[in-house]
Length: 214
Image 1: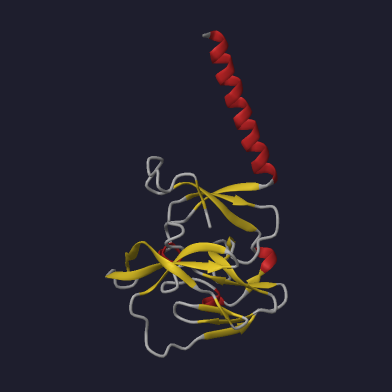
Image 2: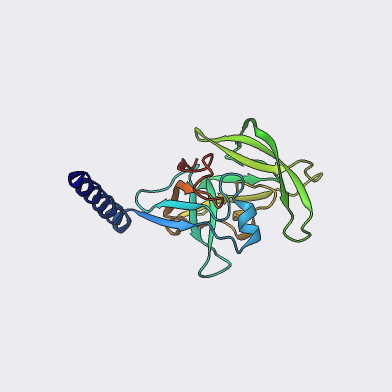
């Protein structure tokens, strides 16, 4: 029994030392804020407010990655978005779709379940959104759009400046992305969202525990 106890203690110490070493060199732990209604909506359905996340600080995030960047409009806060445009790319972003260099980022299929109900941050009314699987550069991920998009929307068009990226919210209806504040410096978006440890619902939410973020 004493030998087993020693093994457990040494194993725990090794785990703590390994996590500390990783945190010092290449990862961060971060909780998705829950005090910003628009940010909380913008990351759905990929992430949720209160998610406990691991951020990767090494390497260079690329097309299709979900990144955390400083909020251009609120110093000291962050935005979270998916890189759907890099320097030189010509972007056309509409209410639910994004076109990059005249190439449409296509929808593969509906999510399961195919719809999600959220509360409008201004009116608190229930709004039903469609959930679909999208493919960007070989990465499949979920994204939301309005069930009934507005007629004749004005598209957002931009050529991404050198050294910048275009961020898109996975929730295309309630977004907080480059359509709102323009392309952002790429070197400010060096934190890639890698893994969800557990959700705001806690450790026993096994559907979202230890899940890789696509």
